[in-house]
Image: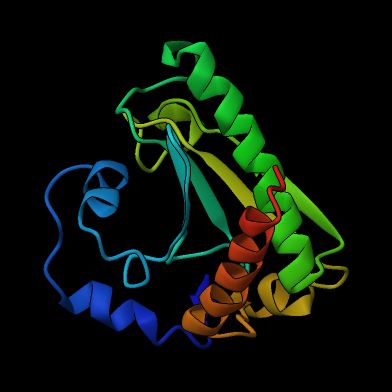
Amino acid sequence: MKVLWAPWRMQYILGEKPEGCIFCVKPGEGRDAENYILHRGRTCFVIMNIFPYNNGHLMIAPYRHVPSLVDLNDEELLELMKVLNLSLKALKDALNPHGFNIGVNLGKVAGAGVEDHVHIHVVPRWHGDTNFMPVLAETKVMPQHLRETYGKLKESFDKLAESGAR
């Protein structure tokens, strides 16, 4: 499927590829805005998918490098769900989607792009976001630049965090 507008991809295509796991490397760099990290908890964090299925596509990952949900301890599992809830609130506040796809791909055969570090995908959905373009033209239209989406979401995450929302 082609993407009509994705100017942020060229930097990734031409840039140096980081070694190691993105869910381990990115939080350790201390460059949250550049890495599209929206929220940091004690045991997990929220990062935007820079090759999203839809605007606002988020990933929630534990800091600890483990391949499956069954490898997480109780504190990590609880916070993962609380941060998922916070993410839904932030997405609703910033982008007002009509629904969400939420999922975990465990293992390469299940579609995991990063198969050895468990993470939850949260994809906001709107009525009509799947229209004739992908079906007939094999083209996905991304209506908002990634940096602009990050700004709106970051503002919502910060506002919710300040209010103590979970």
